[in-house]
Length: 275
Image (cartoon, rainbow, N blue to C red; front, side):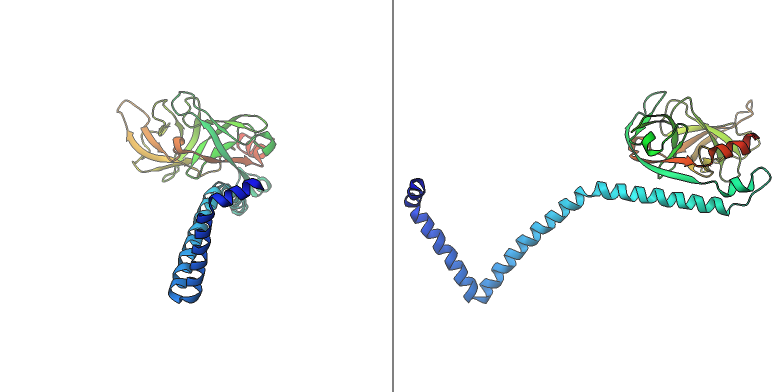
């Protein structure tokens, strides 16, 4: 109490001045419309600015959650699209009518938490594992195109072998003419792969789109792989030498989707003649 009295005695002049200033502003605001309007406008501007900044900060902080929600929703829609597409496809001699009509792909979204692009054997790690239904040999894609294949799985994480790995080859198809080949990395430029086993009598043009062939149970047909950037044909060679610019930019890759073929075993039976 004594300290409070000492403070009031020491700063009594300043306190009296402050109180009088506040009273003066209140009187001016209440008796003069212009001053009142100006004061309220200034106050509203400050409050509005504060609210706008608060909203902007809140919106920025929620972007990550919103982005993840959109990815989850996109995965659900992709799954539904593939189910409808497979139900609409007609059966043929090579495919059992029951199996083909019930083929379905499930899409599980995941985040890339680690990736390498400057090695001969590159890998990427995703934040989904066995507890999320991820299994070895599942295909992995991005919003832009094919990414790779799951090579090993832990409870919460999975390791993926991307296209930029010298030991992986993906069955591919030239979209314009349906010719099948393979895509394989040469171990140098992480943005390109080679299209192999395309015979010299087949037409290959710069700008042709290369997609997954659908001949394996890892990927559905038509997943974009890349676009032909350069192709040459030597007189002594039976095959084209073709460079393909990848659709997926691995150095900016943040989110992927893991593909689960619910009827993989039936798919194997159809293509490999197993009972």
